[in-house]
Image (cartoon, rainbow, N blue to C red):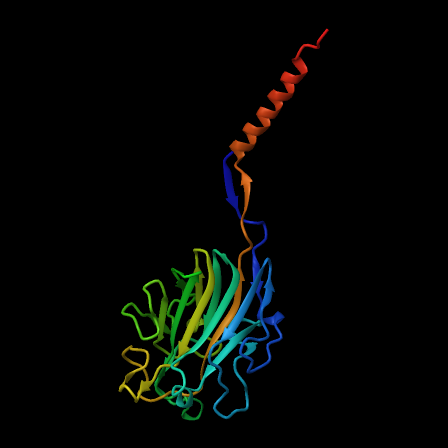
Length: 269
């Protein structure tokens, strides 16, 4: 019997940050979370607070360019944190592989002017998104909702990317919180059970006398007070097999013929 694999009629399960009680500064927000038929474990491998210690990160809060819903904010104070870790790593792991994972990243940008009291002088966001199905790497793609995004695609590789299948980005212009030019819709078409996001706000590594992200144009000094924002994550429901229309017609016709033959069978004397 021929089968056609069709999606469920619903749009899929969403990892909705509004539904998560994430304590600011928590490394995993007390995950795992149930997302439709899946469980999602979220971990932040390196956590920081803001430069003055008044606000803890990672945290869940709103971000203007993503609308009124909440998002996961991950902050990196590179002036002090880079001695311990070159980047913040966010990992979303599912208990089963699923095709078609999508989510939006926001605030991918750069700047050379002095903003917010000079804390943002000379910096460049670097983001690398990797996906896996067990140990198999998957292709990660991205769509820019803005015609003039505040970032570029890195095709030459950088310190944080390990495969051409990764999605690698670097900031090229400033994007305020309300500006969608810093947003990117990430898509993983093939089945994946783990997504890894590495983020650094660029800057010079004085120990190696080179740009930490391996890209020209990064800030000349350790930037301070930069963040990456992760929107809701769409995890499609599993697909279910249903008979193709031709197969269904054949089955129905076969059943009708069988029933007719039974009715016409002569009765024993």
